[in-house]
Image 1 (cartoon, rainbow, N blue to C red):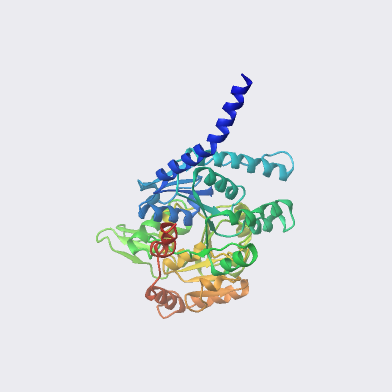
Image 2 (tube, helix red, strand yellow):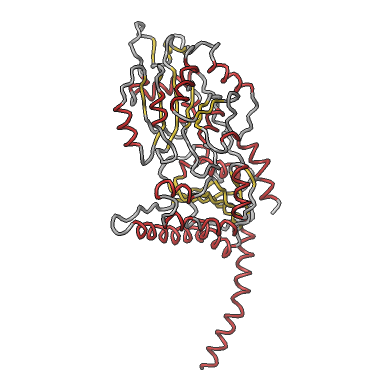
Length: 451
């Protein structure tokens, strides 16, 4: 009897590698035109990964998108019959115990949960992974790929350890642990990154060869027609007083916002004479954006809309309330995915306060603003010149004093078409901006078609 068990065990050990190879080939055959896109974060606030999913679908792939579903993604993604969104559970940290223990429990849970979801989804030829966060996603996706025959594609948006270092300091144990992305990043089949500066850093310091895929605006980031501007302002005026008309129209047939009015008889929309300027900034209220710079610089007559959601919102909301602005109104709404491009396309100036934690990534919000032909003032950091060309498609500043000077110069003749603000917009309209779909087809599609 014992000999029979030994023989059976030997047979299993002999057949296991063969069965594993056969299983992998079977899954690979089924996976030829399927891709899994992984975001260990909120899908609705991960536009680049949404764009990857949409581009893959348009190129004939079926796509499973794994991520947290805290915010609504773009309608185009929800309406695609080639894209399936699979919700990941977002486990919050424990409220008891040391911080590193809380973080460890969360990482272990995410690792097990993500692996289970990957193994349960349709077999994929590729797994596209957003990094950061890379802990534990890179190792889990690589391991799942080994079991299922999938090739791992890591899209480097920034470095996870550099972001954590802003909160905890560079020598904190969690920051040192997060540097594991250096090792695991070398296990991927293909690496993408957002700037040439990051491409060089990955190669020189990490031994990782990556392809630069610049963020580009999607097709829906464009100037908003005047009638749609009016519809948006009227919609927002129900919730946010800054969008309401300063005074009622003497004509009962006229519908008015703070910026526009529509004649009910003709339906024609016009801009109000003497309307305020509309300044827009977008933020996650995180440590890599110092909004006190903007608050200190605001001295012009304008409405500042800060599209916001994040951990430091309460802090900056209190700071805004303490300011005694004479000609400024500040609004901090959270906009739906479909309203955000409309707002950018309706604004007069965009301001970006993003300082890269690594100095190697570029702010997506500026990409979107430029796609809407919206002039931009952006705070200077290491590789910003790859996106914002000072005095060509925007202005670059280093502190609140310099930003204040720029705002005064841009708004001094507002809304006179002879002013600098109008000249920047005219230049953006005349420039030929490459859109995401065309850029993706040139850079990414050949990489996954040839492998």
